Amino acid sequence: MIKYIKLTGLLLLITTVSCSKLQDDLLNVASPSSLETQTIFSNIDLTKNAIDGILVPIGETNSYRGRYIPWYGMNTDAEWYNSSESTSNDNADLCIYDTKANNSLMNTTNNVWAQMYLGIDRANQCIVGIRQYGSPTVGSAFGYYLGTALTYRAIYYADLLKTWGDVPARFQPTDINSVYVPKSSRDVIYKQIIADLAEAEELVPWPNGGFATNDTEHINKAFVKGLRARLAMAASGFQQYPDGVRRSTDADLSVAKMYKIALDECRSVITSGSASLVPSFETLWRNLNKEVLTAGSESLWEIPFAAGRGRVLFTFAVRHTTNDQFQQNGANRGGQGGPLPNVFYDYNVKDLRRDVTCVPYLWGAAVNGIAKQQLGAINKWYFGKYRYEWMTRLVTSTNDDGVNKIYMRYAEILLIAAEAANELEGPSSAAPYLKQIRARAFSAADQPTQVDAYVNSLSSKPAMFTAIVNENKYEFTGEMERKQSLIRWNLLGANLANAKAQLTDLKNRAGAYTDVPKTLYFKYAADGFTLQIYGLNRGETTNPGAGWTSIDWTVLTDSKIAALYKNNPDTKQFWPIWQVFIDTSNGTLKNDYGY
Image: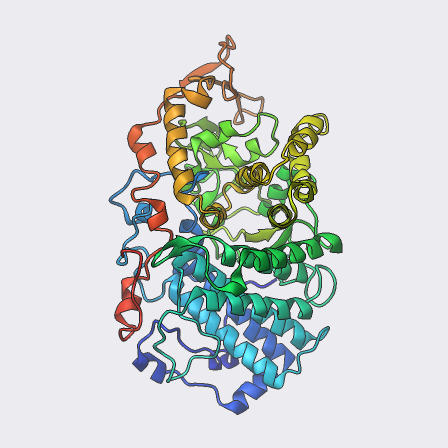
């Protein structure tokens, strides 16, 4: 497993500082000589260490581990920060489209911006070194490592672009002459990394198809193709530019060209048979929490975390009030974010994804080491995809849980294929892909109506597109993928405004939510800690009788709803570059979009 090894002395030789550092810092770092570079990249073991080092910055506290994964992606029409009302809080500002360049959580020299560029610089060193000294060919270890380095660099750039828009382009190792680099057009970067991935996919095998591809922590062809498809869709999609929200005007990034790339790549993965949906949606997420890493199933690639690194459950799991029988990670772990309260009611009641995704309870204070589930309030739900109680390892770290973050799964391949096929060929070509997604979501008895009849009724491109947008919500809520999708569809502002209206209707039990119960009833199962709940489903309003305890299910305030976003999301699609990097850029960096 790639588990954030410590850097060897030789690896340190190929590490240079990111563009955010002062020139004096760079002068104090030894640059590798050509002899040292040749020594590393002509030796397969040293090359592997260097490749592993590209991902080391991800595991740092102020990087993906404790800043990017926990905060990028909220708030959308499906997810929100459960403390969004704390509008004077810098944490909340990151979510409610009110981020400042001096945000106290982010405005540090070792923040994720710097860590991303550190990873990019390490990838650049590896790419140059392997090309010069490693004899990379298809089927060789050096070829695999070159494909991996190209993919890792594309991952960092993909996340930079979706978070900041236009950013500096660095495709060569940093040296004394390239410390200060202004922002480049994102179009240039998109074209480069899409081309890089075309090369990488030729160099790496399919899952379980060869060198190092038997687990989900290593790069494989199915993931590379899927990432290339995702980037093609994003590059041609709507996004905020300094002059407004629009598509790219670069002819190379047109919808026709990019959607064809996306469709071709997705169809290649589908026809390869190298990946597939896990038959049960619940099993998929149980496997993540159990840390099942076998390649060739649904998870195409995961950000790998060691047991003492990574805060996926720490951030997003069903909340645990204290240490208990399921976790020793500390008090008040999980529950930072959750689905919007209306999302549970937007699912079809027979959709098997609903109860996996949306959890209305938390784990209360443990008594003699044993905690019980307890109902919260309608305004605070939890993501059920992440659960300490589904782990097989007892977490004892005080801050980190070590569960991987799924970066891409096969379900996205199917939904991108459906979207691109609908646009290029029409709804009949999209239908088979959408049916596969929905077939897993419903029992065999419900599939004639919820899969076949439903999808077959989508006879126009607009109807199919709307269905795909909705299906993405039902499939990916809680995975922090929704925000970029809404942006590229030009639906971010409109859908968040609609979400406020839906939440208001839910609060008032009006519109589409008139039949949502106002009172829940609960009792405990025979094990003494598992809740049995009546009143969650629409229309469940009859008192179930003796043995049940009631709880009010109406507390959803106007201030909580208003805090979904503070500014128009379409004017704040990106975070600002943090002030510390602006100040140390020698005047080459600036913020746009009114920051």
